[in-house]
Image (cartoon, rainbow, N blue to C red; front, side):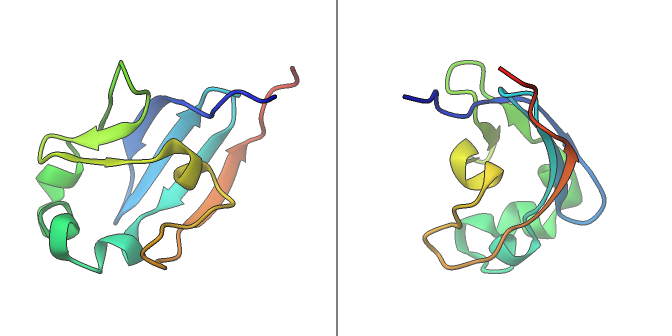
Length: 100
């Protein structure tokens, strides 16, 4: 049995990219642009850069969240799963997971 992936750190990058450090040691740049383009609950963090940059790691759930009440699943951010909305999330590996 494998442990669920958790998020240790998040940093906003250019456009709608985030650099995310995961619990297995992997670091990935994740593009939320297509997901945010769908609007709806994502409209505020899509349209307001200051709101987007307020992303943080929830210490209890180990996922990322914004003060507007939005959070995203670490397993989806890590990949290879995509959001149920059908939006594509581009990912670039910055650092591979550390060996167990």
